[in-house]
Length: 245
Image (cartoon, rainbow, N blue to C red; front, side, top):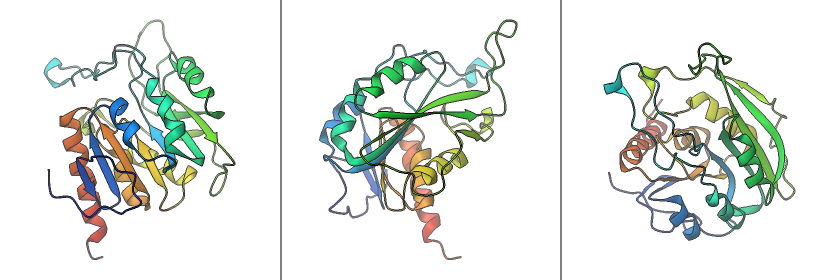
């Protein structure tokens, strides 16, 4: 890891592993780190947690497959209980899931949030699954929820995002989302300088999107390898902002 920049006094820090401009990154289990974040400090939570489906990369060559994700053997949603303390009085939540576990997520969210929409990401390119008895899967589900007197910062967005998924050769993480998708979500539901939290940072796409759109970012990742990838990508994004045009 490279050296860290100076931390703003208003940033909700515990013991971050890296601070890069307006991005504060934590290496560890979000169940342990979330309680250390300052109360009422986050404007939006945008995250793609493990779905509890024991996901395995579908790459055809076994030696090229990603290892299975940590914590994906069962649905673990206790981390959601800490969010009401961390977010501001007016805040929003956008969380990826999948059709077969969406109800588990909905039930876990609805106690502390007002669920407003089910959003669809149309991935364009379909996945595999049961080739003979299942529709070719080409979408992900997202739950969108709010707290307090929240409203969209700009034009009301449509509930379907149509952005092609990354090709297998582009992936740095098995469930990595396209940067244009995350940037679109961020711009639809947050304002510049807002704090965006991702408790499952993965390869850091949400952090990169925050840098490129002028939002402040708090990311947590349990896997040291993916944390290193995320830190590198976010540093590179920050350096590109500083480069003369």
